[in-house]
Length: 265
Image (cartoon, rainbow, N blue to C red; front, top):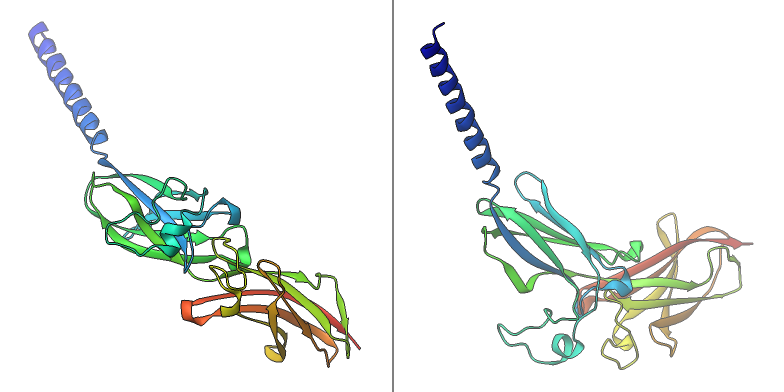
């Protein structure tokens, strides 16, 4: 091979190498545009889910492939009570997007308009009360969704049984006291005549055996924030499930706490 031929081959090789490097570099840079999306999990008929109730888990997925594009936690404050619950709402006004309100800022990289599924799960501090809400929407590269952001509404109540304790054994013929707390999904307080009125929430205690309701009694507000109480009669021995059920059908909110209970003869 003569010198001129060798130089020609080297030149061609360098050209191919540079060309391949340019294509690879160009491909690596086509990752798309940064796109920011603010997402907030809010409680039905209440405020924003915050740290007090364990926050909410937010997930953003590509709706067509299921690939997770962003995920994280919403943990901060619950927002401005006056703006959310008292003042009339005007189109375009800030309600949930105040500085003290929780939210999760998803930072995505999109190279084309993409339909995403946005999901919120919470409150995470009480697994028995955790609910999920999701929506799908089209996002456009570089078009940020900020301010109020995407709002996902979670229905329900957080219900926690205070009495009887898990190891309590009731006795046939002897009524026992049931006491429980009921709060909004954001942890907002329930009181008689309050912003979230205890008188408008129907709370009952049930004894359930093999799927059948054996006993159901109403529980009344106990005079202490969030607290309800009732006396449950016992007629049959055995293993039962004690349920405390909170209901507000007008606002589509329901909550349940349950535990096993032994009833002695």
